[in-house]
Amino acid sequence: MRDLIIRNGRVIDPSIDRDEIADLYVIGGRVSAEPANSGCEVIDARNLVVAPGLIDIHVHLREPGQTHKETIETGSQAAAAGGFSSIVCMPNTDPPADNPSAITWISDRARAGALVNVFPTGAITKGLNGEEMAPIGSMVQAGIVAITDDGHCVQNHEVMRRAVEYARMFDLAVLDHCQDYNIVGSGVMHEGYWSSVLGLDGWPRTGEELMVMRNILLAELCKTRIHCQHLSSGGSVRLLRDARARGIQVTGELCPHHIALTDEFVSSFDTNYKMNPPLRAREDIEALIEGVADGTITLLGSDHAPHACFEKEVEFDRAPFGILGLETELALFLTILVHRTKAIDIKHLITMYTVNPSTLLRLQKGALVSGADADITLIDPDLEWTYRKEHSFSHSRNTPFDGWELKGRAVRTIVGGRTVWSV
Ligand SMILES: [Zn+2]
Picture 1: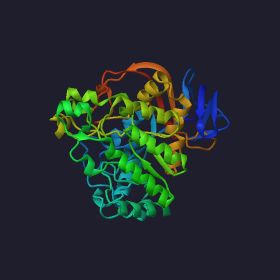
Picture 2 (picture 1 turned 90 degrees about the horizontal axis):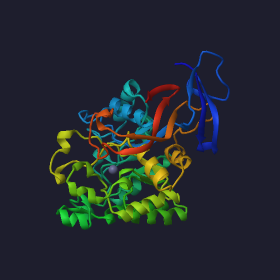
Picture 3 (picture 1 turned 90 degrees about the vertical axis):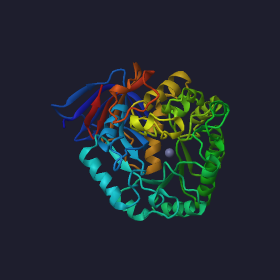
Picture 4 (picture 1 turned 120 degrees about the vertical axis):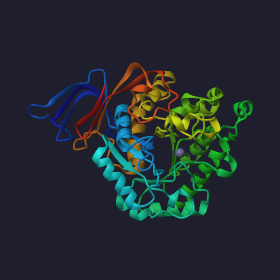
């Protein structure tokens, strides 16, 4: 690995409120205040943004158990191609990551084959069944950065309360997939006009909002941080805004499909429009974007959820939930949030992908200060390009964004001073 000089880029490091045209130096895999003496690699970053390596806090790598969908290796390649130097993987593997040896296995696999940093999460409950707490303390020792039953949601509020209190002892964030099973029932799409027209079971906003409210109450009661994953409802944004104004440690996350698409797309019966929580209405999109603009929603993630073609190519109500996300999320957010709606600027977007996830999960990442790991993402914010799923590094192809024209993308991803991907 050679030392680096990244020349003439717009260096944006929100951790120290830095935004200027400058050179960035890397020596021995770390950011340096002084340039290397000689023989280093020079990267021309004119007209590019030089950002701390982006972090995606919501990724499904499918290993162990479902390697026909994705592996830690292929998922990490997709992450690198999307501009992500770090990803946080969900525990709903097969078997679930609900014990320390599963966490150690994932970390070992990642060390051996992943192009980017992989931070594992552990389950809240054993087998993700919502009943009995997983051994959280020993999973912390094995290296988890949060607990979540993502894909599932703990319905018993007492079990959730105990898990939140236990997590607090380790200064560990609890991430929650907010879904009230009784209200949602067999819902496969947003409950509204289109679910009636199409004759599909509805998944109402209330099913999410009830659990967002539960999490707000528990975060207040237990005085610790709870993070609401992949918010889809405008009502969730309003609840979160009020709670945060009262100083409660609750955060929310946005995935690109929830602002790029509405439930109307489901009328094609294409199962690449089936996700959980579901695509919603125009007014939800407006509320979500407003929530990002005013700082109510502070984290971005993909909910990268690979599924094989044979699994998705079935009737809509029988198909699994979820789509790919790692290689399109940055471009979709740049296109929608920065260019089209101008809800936020690129510095704000980078904050949501670097400082905010590192703060939530206590990661020693997301900054370009001297001595920091040289995890760096080079972004061309104005590059116009067309996403083609056949070029994806993922093992799967389940995306509704094939052929979309997007503006802005990562052009190089550096992890620990080593370029792991470039256009
Ligand atoms: Zn989920």
